[in-house]
Image (cartoon, one colour):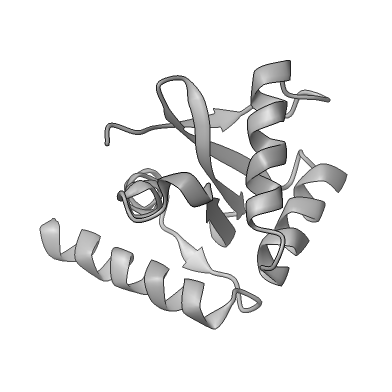
Length: 124
């Protein structure tokens, strides 16, 4: 699944299609408290929390929320899970900036991200 990763600018509101995709994604991630906290932090302070959007065919299928090189959380649409989107986001972000993990990250997500980072480091 060819996925690109874009930094959504700190503009007040993403465009209509992006906002629709983000709304669906946040609904899919509703049960993940660390994602909801990171999402709220981005909405409150977009100059400090960066939102990277994973796109497939121009549509947002996943996001990573990063603050000062620290991965706060990431989420992938339910329909596209298991296709390497999360792994691709972690890989690209790790290459662009040295990622650390938030202490507040869900343990299952932290284990996934740690495995992705170890895999990425092994490929260098």
